[in-house]
Length: 417
Image (cartoon, rainbow, N blue to C red; front, side, top):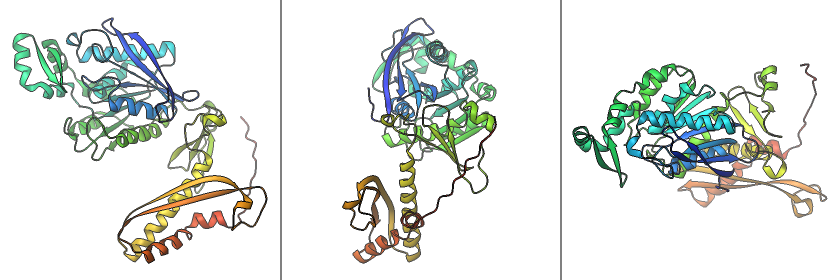
């Protein structure tokens, strides 16, 4: 099934949960061989198909990750009674999910949790030794935080042993054992002892789980750790762009902590100052790592050409260079002129055309490469200013480099193993 994000397909699977209930799961798979496996835990009383889970998982699959997401006991399409579950059983369900991956595919390299699912992956991380990295999205620092969803019912739950509560328009039975279980959790201790890389995603204006929770998680963790602000995103990441952003950043960040191809690790490939180095990832036929010493990117070919579609193509990077240079050049010029230019975007398309169709080309035979730009400018500018910006676009350094004759010098060095 194509989910529109570059993921190849989704498999429906089942496995036994911690209370012997059959749990329903989806395994989102990339086109080609997965570069890594991830395990995703959803939010409190949500399901594996909630927006954030589905979109982040699909986004990661589109970047080469295989992602297992499942419904906790008694939720979604999973069997079992939610009333008999608690935070500890959720953690055990996660460990069972990791066991399934370990047995049938490969143990997860990456653990991802949203909201209370984030707290669950932090608690489970120490029991999944193969996992090298953990990511939380809008997670509470203390599982007991979820009680704010039914504060008015806590007294009744404690007095009667159980009570029905309304959460997100649905009715759930919460038992006293749930309250006792979350009250006894010491998540900070587990975070400090998990010995895995951590990235914390959180929106400063999250009205469900306050930003202070992100600070507490970050402070409890040992390095390496990172924090990414989600700006004005809501707690459930209902805007597609916010979920895609999380997937983009997470995929790029996680590469650093995934098992490195043996060949690259042995050769200790590091770019010299002023140099950019591109080398094979060791997974997939054409997948490459692009490293300038500060940033690491991926390049690949689409599946139709034998690649794994884990990153942009070489021609996409060429188009990106032209687009970035164009937008930067126009921004510098507009600021210098103090023109009211609010925002600039450059669309770039690369294709090959017959030379005879190119009016300005010197050669008239064969095919040539054509880069087409469409520049969009937001702001109150007049026709004369717009025409001047069009002239300035042609003066961007990358544009000039591509248009003039260039020399490429190449050498091949044989490296002994």
